Image 1 (cartoon, rainbow, N blue to C red):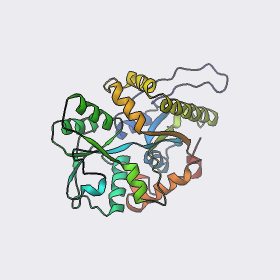
Image 2 (cartoon, helix red, strand yellow):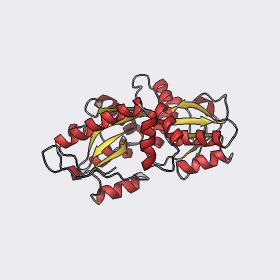
Image 3 (cartoon, helix red, strand yellow):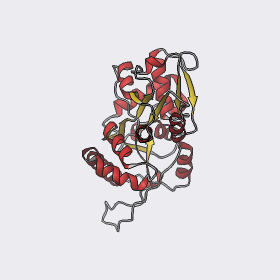
Image 4 (spheres, rainbow, N blue to C red):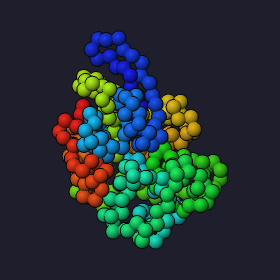
Length: 283
């Protein structure tokens, strides 16, 4: 997402432009070129960039529930039921992979022994494999999980089930820190450290998130304009099952720090080897 103008100082406003990035590597290139002002990002990426000396700040945490275990087996109620089975996943070195690693570790499930992980190229590849009967269980982000379920129903396939959200499993595995801050909005260097602009963006996002949850059909129709490959019914279902709650990063710093400390214990490179400084948490 690229935002090129919000008028908070009486200046002539510039239009906002939206760009969809496909993977974290592409996002890093866009940021390095100075082509983005604000971006929706996985929660670990701003910490990693800030600890590498890049002038970014995390303005909010907006997504708290995103990942779903989908299964062909109605008896699979959660991740513990996957012992000895193969799980299809599109995640590589990103927040989904990090969260899955920490969850399996906490449940005492060893990847490669207790459970086999099969790597898909991306979320749409995982959907295609599941629809073709080449996968029994998949961990997918929204709205891809809803797309899979919608297409399977539309094509008359054998039933698929939402077995468990990773966030529900996380709360069970980490009762002392049950919330999982997964994604938020990051301010890049191009905003010139403008606190008023940062606050305006964060407040506008929070209002939009509340509107989206209150009116899923209208929100899905709007999202479809920017994601035309996603059917509106799948987007609407995704909105209904995803926790969207734009909270200022400074207000949820304890939850973020708990996540970063957990990652530091086993995957320190994913957050840059240390906790971010206090100025990182905005707006």
